[in-house]
Image (cartoon, rainbow, N blue to C red; front, top):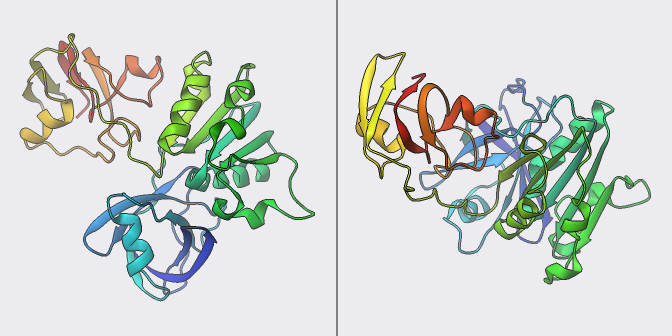
Length: 317
C-alpha cells in the first residue's frame, strides 16, 4: 500500500469532488495506463475502487473523482465528509481491468455521469498517441457535468459531445442510432450508472464481443447469477498447489476456494471487473460474467461468479 497525502480537493460538479493524491516526500508515483484504478482505504474501515482520471504518464499525483451517491454503501459519503486536504490516505498501486486496445482504428468513448473518470484518462491517452477517437458524455444537466471546464470554451474539442437529458432519457443521446453500425477496427469503451450500462449493452448486442469494452462504476454491479441447470457438484483441480477442492452445484468457484482456505484475488464478486480472472485447462465452467469474450472463455474464467458445468475443472492455481 502507498501512504499518500491529499494535496487538494476540487468541486467538479453537483455532488462530485476530485481528490489529488501525492507522495508527501515528492517522489514519483507508480505509473499507470488509461483505465486503471486504485483501491482507497476510507475512514471507517471501508475500501473502495476509484478510477484514475489524470493523464497516463502523470506520475506526480493520482487524481480521482467521487460522486456522493445517496443510498450507496457509505464509501462515497465518507470520502466527502471525512477526508480533507492535508490528510493522509492509503491506496493500492494501480490495477487495470479496463485497458485500451492497441490496434483499434477508431475508438468511441461513451460516459454516463461519474463514469467519465476512466474515460477521461482514455481520451488523454488516445490524443497523446495521435489516434482516432470521439467522446459522448451523457449527464442530466450542466450542473452535474464533471470536468466541464475541460470541454467548454473557445478551444473545445469538436470530437467531444456532451448530451443533457434533463432527467428524461428520450431527450439525451440516441444510443441506438449512434451504435447501430459496427465497422471493422472500431472499438467502444463505456462506463456509467446501471441504466446507462444496460442501454449501451443492448445497443451493441450485434457488435463483436472483442470490440465492446466496459466497466461498471458509480452504481451497484449486477449480482452473480444463481446456479443454472448445467451446474453440477464436482471437483476443482489446482495445478500449482496440487490440490483437489470439492465444489457443490450452488457454489461459485470462489466460494469453494475460500471454504478450502485457498487465497484468490477478487474485488466486485459480480463478474464485472476481471480481478479474479483465472486460467483453466480442462473441464467446462458455467460462465456468469459480464467481461470475458467468447474466445477468452475457452481458457479463462472469472471465479467470483462462475460454477462448474462439467468437471473436474483444472485451474492454474
